[in-house]
Length: 515
Image (cartoon, rainbow, N blue to C red; front, side, top):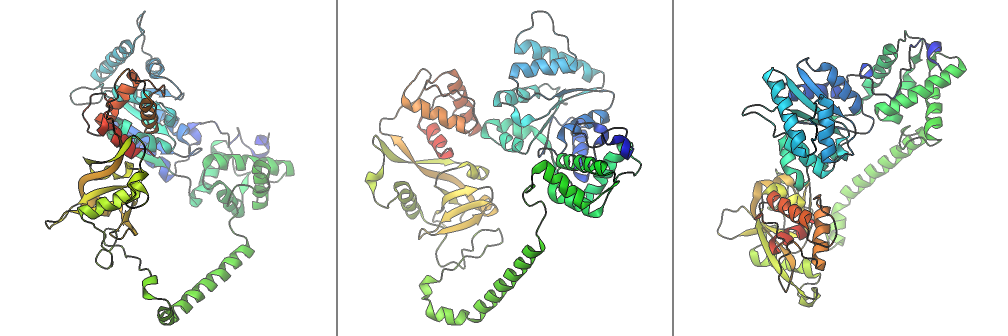
C-alpha cells in the first residue's frame, strides 16, 4: 500500500524468509561461517539454535546460496514427521528415485547410501538441513543419528544441520540422546540484534526493497524500536511495517518515536510489551531516592556494627562462608566442617529420607530403606533429583563425603556436619569428586525383576519414569517390547548391564533421576 509513496519496489518488512533480506549481524555471520566450516570439512553434525523470529529459516535459505556447485542439499521444514517419513522426505529432496516395491527403511537407506557414495566418488558433498528440529521425536532423532553412520573409512558421506529453538540443546542433552549429542562437533547460537545493529538492519531492508531514502527513521524511533523489539527481527519487521503505514496515511516521510509508539499500541495494545519503554522520569527518580536510602542505611549499619554485636548474642549472628578459588565453600574459615565421615553422612541421609531423624516407622508399607551405591562420573551429578552423598578426593586415610540436598548446572546445596545448608560451585564438585555415589531407595521387601510380559502395578510407574527422562515408551502398564527397548537404552546410557530387565539397580537409578 505504501510502497509507491516511499519509492519501494516491494514491501521491505515482509515476514517471508527471503535470503536477499538477511542482515549479516555478527551473530548471523558467525552462524553462516560455522555451518560452512562444518559442511566443507565434513564434520558430520552441526547444530544452530536461536529464539523465535531471529532469522533461522532465512539463514537456512541463505546457506544454500553459499554452497559450492558440487554440494547436493536437502532442506526439510516439516519436523512433525515419523522416522519413515523422514527417510522418504530426505530421498525425495535429494532427487533419489526409488525402485518399485520399495517399502522398508532398509530400502530407503540403501538407496540413500548408494547416492551418497556416487556423490563422494565424484568429489562432491551432501548436506541435510532440518528446520524447527526441536519438534523432532526421539525416534526421528535416533534415525538421524543412524544416517550419520553412512560414511567411508575416513569421511562422513552426509553432513547434517539441525536448526531449531534454544530448547533443542536441552533435548539433545537428554540421556537417551547422549550418543547423538556427542557427535555434534559444531554449534552456533543466533543472538538478537544489538542496539547498534537496528539502524543498519532497517536501512538494509529498505535499500534491498529499492528505497532511495524517501523513508527516514529518526533517532528516537530507532531507540523505541529497539526498546520494544529487544532486537528480535520479526518484531522489528512488524513495528516498522506498521510505522510506515501510519506515516503514509499522514503523508510524512519521517518516522518519529511518536509514530513508532502509535504503531506498537496498534500491534500490541496500550501496554505494549513488558519493559518496552524503559523507566519513566518519575520512576528513575524513585530508584535514585531508594538507592540513596539503601546506601545511607548500609553506611549507618557499618557505623553501628559494634553496638549491634554487643546487643545480639554471638550465636544468633550467622556467618556466611566465603567462596574459595574454585567458587565453592570456604571450609577453612567455616566453623562447621563441610565434609562428613561415613557414619555421619549416612545419618544425615537417612534423616532426610525419613523426614524425622530416627523415625524408622516413617517408611512405606511393603518397602524398606535400602542404601544403593554407584560409581558415577562427576558430570552426571546434575541429573540426580533426590538427596545423595558422594565420596570426595582426600589425602588422609579417613574417607570424606559430601551430602548433597539438591543440584543444578551451577553447583549444589550441601548439608554440613550440623545439617546446615551450604552452597558449592560446579567446579568445586568436579575437581574434588571421588566417584562413589549413594542414596536411599525404597526397595520392595519382595524383590522382583520386571521383564517382558509383566503387567503388575510397578510396570506403569516404571513406564512413567522412563517417559519423564525422554525415553520413548507407551504407558500401558504392560512390560512390552517398547518398554524393554527403552530400559536397554537407559542401561546403555548409564553403564549398566544391558539386558532389558528392570532389576533393583536399574529401578533405583531411575528413582534417583525422576521426582
